[in-house]
Every structure is written in C-alpha cells, then in structure tokens.
Length: 342
Image 1 (cartoon, rainbow, N blue to C red):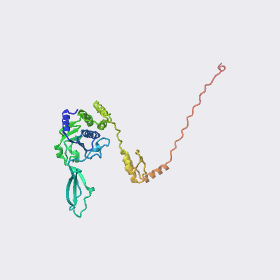
Image 2 (image 1 turned 135 degrees about the vertical axis):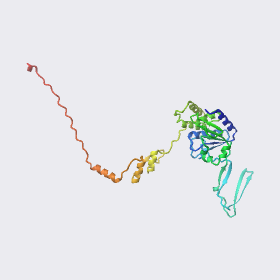
Image 3 (image 1 turned 180 degrees about the vertical axis):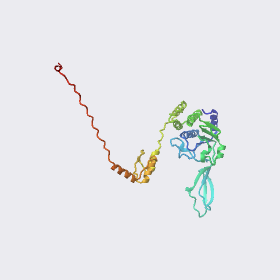
Image 4 (image 1 turned 45 degrees about the horizontal axis):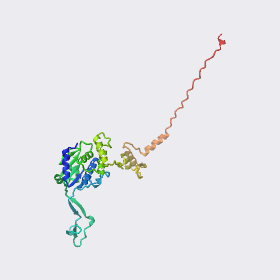
C-alpha cells in the first residue's frame, strides 16, 4: 500500500498549487501513459492550470488514451520570445503600443529606409524559462532521462516542489509515492484518486482501466490480485469502457525480409499478403536465399542444367514383378467302401 504520510503531503501540495506540470519520460509503457494522462485530466477538472509534458510531445504517444493529444514537449512557459532572421542594417526601430479599447498589445518593427519589411511567415514564437508551483513526475527514475525537458532547466527542478510516482524509490522528490505494492501504477493512481475523492470522469476511468489491462495481460497475469479486480469494478462504475486495441500494422519479420528482397505487398485494404516475384539474376537469388534464413545455397545455372541432364540420362530402375504365390491344392481324403474291407 501507499505510505499514507506521503499521500497526505501530496494532498497538501496539490491543494495550494495554482499551476501544475505532469511530466513523464521517453519510451513510456502504456501503464505510465495512462497514469500520467489520468492525473493531468483530474487536475484539469479541479480548475487548476496544468500542463502535460513529454520529451517528444504527443506525436509518438498512444492515440487511444484520452488527454495525450494535449501533451507538449516544451517546458518553457513564462517569457514569450519573438524571433526572426536578422540582417545587419535592415531594422530601423522597434516599438510597441497598447490599444485600450481592444485591449491588445502591438509590437512594431520598422525596417530602415530602402529595406524590405520583415516577412511575417518567418517570424517564430516560443517561451523561455519555466514556472510552476508543483511538478508531478510519473515513471521518471532520473531527471536527466527527460532530455530537452531537463536540459537548461536544472534550477527550475531544484526550486520547485516535486512529487515522484514510481514502482520503486527514486532519488528526487519532496514527496515519493512508491507503487510497488500494486500490480501497476494505474492501479495505484486509481486507489489514490479514490482515497483523495478526486473526480473520476469516464475518460479518466477508461484510461486507468486500459493501463490495468495492459499490465495484467487482460487480467490473465498471475500477478493479478483481488484488489485489481475490485479497482477495475470501481472504474467500470465510473463509466470506464473496454477499448479494443488497434492491431499493429507492421508486417512480420519474415514478411519484411521478403519485401526487402523485392517482393510486392498487396495494396488491398485490410489485406497484408506477399505476392511472388520471379528471381532472375544470381544476385536476386542470393538475396532471396538470405531472406529465407541465410543458409540456403543457390547453385549456378550451369550446375543446375548439368544435374537435370544427368537425371534424364540415368536409366530408371525397374523393379521385378513379384509372382503371386500359388495356393497349394486342397488334399482330398480317399473314401473306402465297406465291401472292400472284407
């Protein structure tokens, strides 16, 4: 079970925080993705300013999990920076003014006399420096593993309250929630939300149930406990849906080997098949042999022709016909008349 002292500390930090960041690292498991997205959605439901962060953003994450499409890969959220290609002597003056009626801020960049105005398509916007009251790390064992979310922001992590949620104790974090007493992190997060009476929407419940199913092989794992089934039952009551996972569109290793050697893949929708291609050159034959396992030896065409000719000239062996065994005639006993015995 989770240390109740840590749960209490986490509750206090979450209540007083106005802005929260939920961070998880590279190559996360479905369990970690489900947990991070669920925490993000739950805090968002509380009306707090919350950001979900992943080193690669949302492009490489599971589309079935609600909330992951809102993941960002940029930690900076404080200072807005406007950047563009600069050429010496082309910019004359930079100024700004505020329109009180429209409540808009205008930044004006004037070119020097005779120079072309700045191309608006080449202007870029981004944020620098980070600011948050609380950072929740899900499945992160080392801050350096966060890559671009840590590089240049070391002081930010040192000055901000951290809550580390993992299956074992990690070196960082003011609050450390160890989930080793549960089958997976999703199970622990579900229990945590229930104990803190956080609102569990159908999307959150579905995310956590998906994490449970992935970690327990659809509840077939021997690690599955009565607590697992009890939490799954609670999630179903909160509107969790069991989602049929998308099948991988990648081909098998054997099929991919054949495709690399010149095989053609069928373009019919929903059908993945390999159609034969004529092997013509010796190079093609060697590649085909390699694709078929690497041990097959393709003989030169001259050797193959010689073997065929030899087989044609070799006389066929005719097996002698076996004669049918003759059935011996039935022996007839002689009969004697009584008169002959006198």
